[in-house]
Length: 301
Image 1 (cartoon, one colour):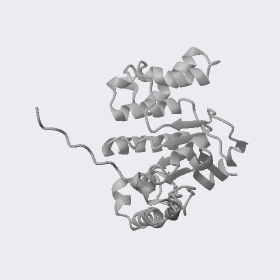
Image 2 (tube, rainbow, N blue to C red):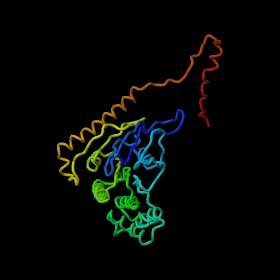
Image 3 (cartoon, one colour):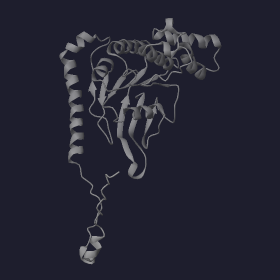
Image 4 (cartoon, rainbow, N blue to C red):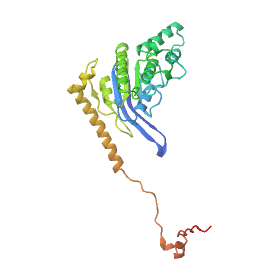
């Protein structure tokens, strides 16, 4: 049985003419310990899908199951790492992680909770910066602090909502490797949302593109059989890697062309204007409609 099941899920926002259908007919099964990347353009509904899995939103249709239980709201078994850091600026690295631990493990003894916090911080190599506040950290360190906070809850399902998109390429690659190392050690099931094809191919077992909405749905999945650990230099030059990359990019470009075609050739709604029957009016009526000439300003002093 799949650890995560998304069955015929649809989601929209608004009502009446302002209604926007974001997702439609989403079906996805993720096995225990699997790493799946959902890839697509910005604004197509990737974060909406992630919020549904996390329990922050409810689907309009369909259902989502985690470990056989229907998702009915947020739960510690699902840890979500946001695109922004979401750190409290007045707390240190230790304090930001401690918020999660103290909330989830209220009944646990103090020294045990302290050990959990330290372990989560060390897993992302922030031990030497545990006393620093977000304003004293680089972007990469802030994101690692966010990852540590999520990991401190020991979630079985790790949800990554474009957590590395704001980072430079070098920092991004370092944190990618740290996440993969953590997954190898802890064995979580991982769902990654990204708009980076190379990131998806480097990290995931399966890559599934999301079509461009409205009513976005999942496209054909790509199985990534490259074994872990993956060497960036080797896979970039591998024929199989280039084939998979080309397949995903082709789907995304085709989606963009479809969107352009809809925009350029779609139906045009004309204003509801009724022509005037001039036979019902005398000539004097139209004289009154003529604009009066503007008076010229006097230049005399």
